[in-house]
Image (cartoon, rainbow, N blue to C red):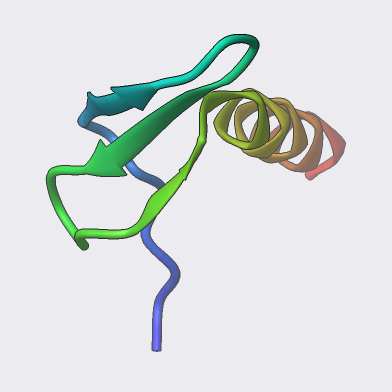
Length: 49
């Protein structure tokens, strides 16, 4: 099964120091800081290829 790269997300909740986003494609909900980490990892992987 291919993993979703979360091309489109929307903010679903904000707390004091965190923000939660939902992927419009697969429905996963995660903290926006995790999403930034995922984006960096994807970029690093594609640069190594």
